[in-house]
Structures are given as structure tokens and as C-alpha cells.
Amino acid sequence: MAEETKKKPAPKKDAKTEAGAPAAEKTPKTAAAATAVVDPTKPVETPVVAAPTAAELLGEDANAKKIIKAKHAKNVVVGVANILATFNNTQVTITDMQGNLIGWSSAGRVGFKGSRKSTAYAAQQVAQDAARQAMAHGMKEVEIRVKGPGSGRESAIRALQAIGLEISSIKDVTPVPHNCCRPRKKRRV
Image (cartoon, rainbow, N blue to C red; front, side):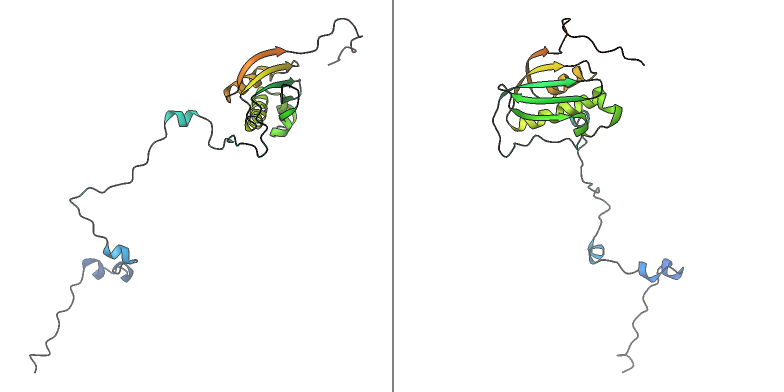
């Protein structure tokens, strides 16, 4: 009977457990960690992440607004873009050939305040905003009419071209006096 009740051999102690390592390291924290077996002969596969292309890096920013078809689209293909560039502001109004409004924007509407409304960058943003509204109604080709002496004249035209509108003609419709009315008093600075 003494032979039947043999003592089981004591479990071997690891060097870490003898050195006073915490008991939490001995037991795996999750069942997945306990079943994972790593074969040292096979290379570890890492997920491949594609690097961004040059077109993605140089293109528009990720927060750029997409052109979404308007709910009650007017399906106007050809129109007129009126750009009013004053010393203090820039306004872009896009109409159909009869003069009915399709979309408009100004520097204040886009979010510029004070002296920044008169910059060329503000005019570029204004033209893009108005063009997105018009393209939502199916606009593809515009005739541009520019009025005023402001700094946003050319940048607004370039922005309309860059967003994808085809430009058929550019006219300068700035009113010029022909000695009919008495001019205003001289501005004192």
C-alpha cells in the first residue's frame, strides 16, 4: 500500500519565479495568448499598408467638398459667371443665359472677415464654392464677366477653370465713365 501512494514529483521552478517575479506573468492573460504558437523558422508576416501616391499627396486636401447633385437640379449646361472684385470683397454669381440665379458666393459667406476678404486666396475660395453649387445643377461651360479693380480677378478665373468648368469667353465689364458725370471729391489719405 505504501507503493500505491507514491508522491508526485514537485513541479520544476523556473529561474524567474525563484527570483521573485510576480505570479501574474506565469498565467496568460487571454485564451488567445495561451494558444498562440510562434514558429521561429517562419518569418513573421506584417500587414502591407500602401503608401500614398504622388497624385494623392499633391491633390486636393482630404476635407475638400465633393460635388453632389442638387435635389431639384435645373440641368443647366451653359451659363454666365459674374465676378465682382472690389477693393474690399469678392463676389461670384453664376446664372443661366437668361440671368436666372444658379449659385453665388462671397468672401464673407466662405468665412473670411476684415481685410482678408479682399485677398486673392479668398477670391479663389469664393469661386470654388460658387462653382460647386453650379456644377450640382449640371453646369459644364461658363462665360465669364469680370467687373471691378480688385486683387481677386485672375485668381477667381483660375479657380473656376481648375475646378472643371470649361470657359468659353472672358469679358471685362467694368463701368468706365466717358465724361458724363462729375467725379467724386479726391480721396484724402
